[in-house]
Structure formats: C-alpha cells, structure tokens
Length: 118
Image (cartoon, rainbow, N blue to C red; front, top):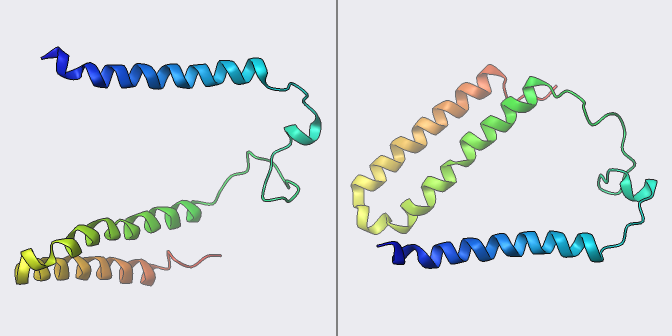
C-alpha cells in the first residue's frame, strides 16, 4: 500500500530539493551589488508615489468581491456548455435558473449603488 505513494514522495522530495538548491546556488553565484535604484519598488516604470502602507477604501474590497462572485459564473458555465447535449432540457432549465439568480443579484447590487466608483 505504501509503495503506491512512493512516486508522490519522490516527486515532493525532488521539488523541495530543486527549490532549495535554486535558492542556495543563486545566493552563492548571484551578484551582491545593492544600490538605491535596484532597491526601489518598481511600479510600471513610474516613480512610486506615497506610502506602501496606504489604506484602501472599503469600496475597493466590495468591488473586488463582487468581481470574484460574478466571475465565478464562468467556472460553472464552462462544464455546463461541455455537457449541454447530455443534460438536455433539464440542464437548460437549471442553467436558466442559475443565470436568473445571478442577474437578480447583479440588479440588486446595481440598484444599491455598489458599482459606483467615487
């Protein structure tokens, strides 16, 4: 029974050795010439403005959660589209209910003004 897990254990050991080996070799061989330009944070080629500890508005997190919520529907639509012929009318009705629920949620969020960026 344990012999069946041997390939997995070997793969994990090789992955760990590769990761640790890469870190050790890069720290030994790599150049160590720090300067202020190399140590500065890189933001799309622009000079950084403000502190990295800046607080974000709650609105930012609400928009992010709504994006994730409505983006997950694609995860459910893809397998449904693959199996559409096998599911028949029942599958179509179930997906219709799913889309209607998502649409009602979208309208609710829109009416509450959660998508307005100020």
